[in-house]
Image (cartoon, rainbow, N blue to C red; front, side, top):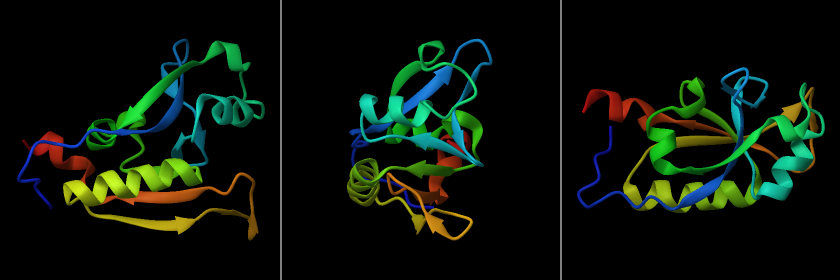
Length: 127
């Protein structure tokens, strides 16, 4: 696992929706969902099980990925701008990850979503 030699660059990656009643984050299938912006997240929540106003919109940083926020075992669904921010920050910190486009039954969805498998998510548990 990569270990940064300098302090963690903990830039904002995107936004996730937390349901305080159910005590969980909103998922896209098996991955915790990370939107580009709060507005984009609200559009995603239009298809959720609960009303959007039931959720708390939370900013997500690389440190959240390291602690596996949302308990998705290092797998996240990111919108395009969130993915760009994630890649820039993960690369600058020397973290390993894989990316693949998400397709729902072989059809691309809008906004385009990318599945990130973050190899370094267990790092914080081992330190």
